[in-house]
Length: 328
Image (cartoon, rainbow, N blue to C red):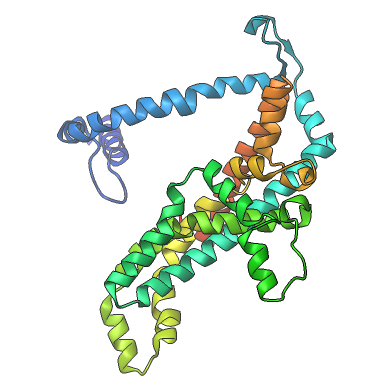
């Protein structure tokens, strides 16, 4: 066999190897694509949506490297390099906003995850289906309220006049007089965390309840035969059974660590709590819309996006090194 023929065979084998998915062994040939044309056609609208609304707007990031003036055309804008980013990180207000965002996101992440898992475990132990559905429905309802309505309910509950929180605490003799919760910055992060738990805990339990239903019932039977009580079953069967779901959701939520929210902080914040209530989203709105500094607002948005992407990859890498479930 000549060297030319041998080279052609090696080249053909390499080409064929590249066309085969190493995990599922499916040949990515035109024949396969033709067989899956229905799936491809179904994915086209989603791909177009992502391109138009998620990727096309990225060209606007160029404003962060310009001294953007709306009256001038794009070609006549003044390019300033990283000046907006340097101003951003030297600005004390942005450092304060970054602190508030990280703190409130961390509180929301911890409280939201713990309460969602806890409620899912408790609901799983309820054997009366009617009562279980009632509890689930009541816990889901706040999720469908807009933050405008939710912020109104929170503000009314914390009112010093007839707010239910002050009334209950005074009845329990925990406080002697009503507290102006929304006028002191030290309470603001806790109020935001508690409000997020009240609004989203029911919705957050859906995935964990679905994960619990996928646990093999024979594991509970084996635990019962070994004399395990309810709490021990939750600890040694249920919690390990939902660990993979927990890790995946944790990785996804870490990517939103700089996404503390906007509506609740904007609606509940006031001049007395401004040092504790402003987030990056409010900072972007303030500089981008109110003050017309679009370049600085875009730089802040780019910083938020890049940090989020980096955190997702770091969390995914750590999960991979620990042998846990991961996104990619």
